[in-house]
Length: 469
Image (cartoon, rainbow, N blue to C red; front, side):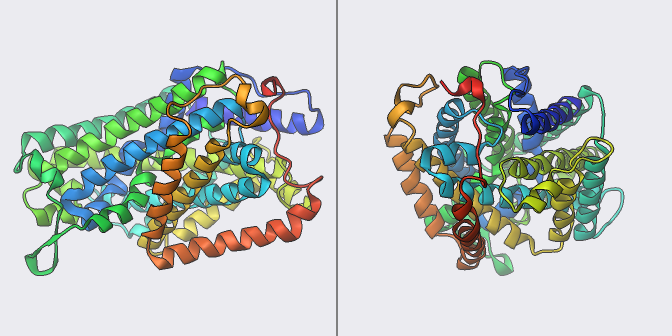
């Protein structure tokens, strides 16, 4: 974790210096391996496997693995877009810097709002799952436990927690071991063949078997995209990656590949190894592990996941507070708000931004989990859609001849991605679309009434000087 926090601390310190003196830049000191490990520490793929995927089993049953596989294929095209844009615009601003440069400042602002929604919701979504995996030791209320994890993560952010780099490595290894144990046990206790992965069945009420329709799979793709979403975090490191023209793409694609394997292989094993369709639909992964082995193994896996979730919450709150801090750097708010979000505490952390991320996260733990999933799925899909639009525009004018990693099959891939993601959005529940759309509408009004009239002094998205050629 030290590497993660140290890079964040450098970002904060150098950003402040750059505000006062534009000559300072972030230090390029991270290679592909370091960037991939840092990104995986935020993605926490096994935590997603054990917290988010069980709800997919409840909705999609045996079609869960197929839905995640389709989502992963879509994410390859998304990763290509991120890779090209990330090498053209290697900014710590991530999506909003890339989209602002290519598709205009309004589009960039909307991407920022959608990404802010995601970073505000994902930590509590993961944190709520802690209680389930502490159950072998103590029974706790899920919402209260999730709020406790968020408060702990916020305090860690306020204190600017320092730990050795090997701690993050240990938590990551524990996650992978837990996922590996589940995969091995699932395959060793297979009750159905590979054909079950496309049988499209889910347990209904009163023990009946219901068919999973193609439309239900399409609707589930929004959450499936969320399952592997964290690979995009790599672009936030682009100002600190060595040779970003090459290494941004490598880091994005490597993280996506590793995350997909860690998540998809156990999902296949669980689908084949569940004793019954009812057990699969219940999504009780801890119970399945115990049934396949013994209570000691089940407890070990559960505790590995609980520790990983707590660690992920701490890392995500610390990093997400820096996203809000960066928005103050780029003058997204009225000056008093920018000054408040940019305030550093006695430990060197942006304490107001940390509270602004962590406290609402604790409150969100008491919101209906399905609503959190739905809004996050719509936000991720919309964000990817705008990134695809920016990728379609990435070879105009001076950008056509700029040195950058170039995706294959351009412009076919961005166009196909825009069509697919647009269709996925139309298949989401109306309530989730209204919630997300309402937030986007308010953001658009804020742009029209405040940011646009002050375009010379507000929402000033910067690009590192060494990447302007």
